Length: 120
Image (cartoon, rainbow, N blue to C red; front, side):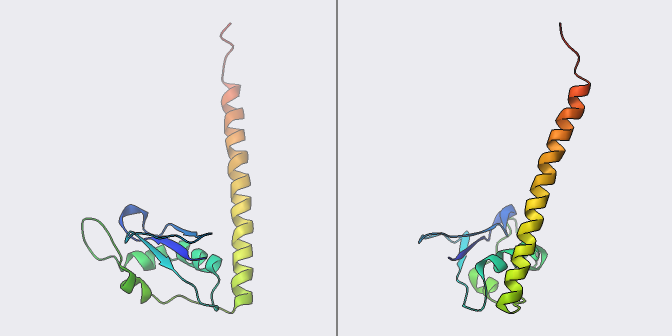
């Protein structure tokens, strides 16, 4: 599927993979990957290179990057095997981060419960 990328305002750089045919407006660009780049890798690259993308927005009240400018940004593209390994590592890290965050919420709630006094 195409990689969808927001290209205007404070949400520049948010990305997802389209799982079906769709159309977008100029605020969301559809990036079609060649056979040399995995869409999942492109998303990981975007998430880790937001500053590179944002420097192309120019100085204006509402930051925006058009498709022709976006097309001129160089993306480091390793071999497919390396892309897949990187994507798998990032997925595992995201999973661990989610689990730790969930545990943090549980621990925070548990800590708060220590200070809750019985109102009876």
